[in-house]
Amino acid sequence: MTKIYKLTVFEPSGEKLLDESFTAENDEQAKELGQNLLNEKNYQDQTHRCISPAGQLLLFHR
Image 1 (cartoon, rainbow, N blue to C red):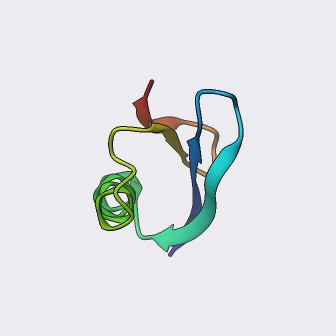
Image 2: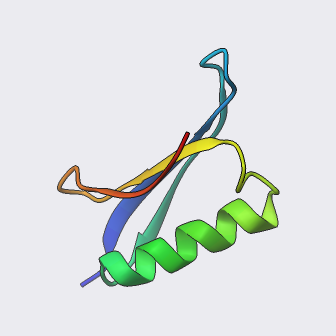
Image 3: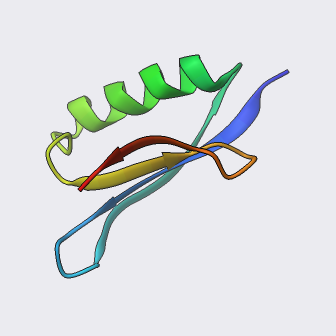
């Protein structure tokens, strides 16, 4: 069963640069997909977080 995960990227000012939902089978796949999205959009060094449907923080960078 696929679940919906949320990836958000922020500027230091708090402005959202990316606010995207995506589906994954599990948390591990979501981590990988989230990291791939960050790399594709060149946001890996920006403040970001990826959250599971249960509210668990899967990826975080400040």
